[in-house]
Image (tube, rainbow, N blue to C red):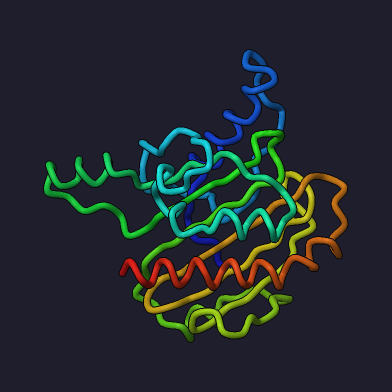
Length: 212
């Protein structure tokens, strides 16, 4: 599937925050996760990792239901970082420039680099049919989520354990939600999370739609 640019900087920032709790002076050897986050971030001024008040993390973070995320995964996510921030928007207003039509969020437990969750949203002029045509082989459809939706579990080149990717198109926006697990997690265990993540994705879509 064609990869769309996302929030590499936000994810890296969170990884550094998680590692600093135990070894603040040691760099992490963890390879970065291969998510949709392979292009430019929408901002160089992401929020620093904050205790889970997702509103404070800004970007796409306020759309994530933290209680639903924790209950779905069985984890306690504690830190989040998102972009663009209110500072980005204020700067754009002063410069009379536009903030890119995209938002990101990265969430971690703070105990280790993984599991982590990334959410990326970007506006597009492409329609649902074009989006559907670009889906990779092996993607499974998701009902009642946007106009077109899919999920797939990646087991290779994740930088950690299996990763559940769930994406959808709705009303001119492309969403990608990715949950990457620790090494040695069984792929079947990740597939068991699809139902819960579908509910989480629907809640994200609803929250974003209400703001629009």
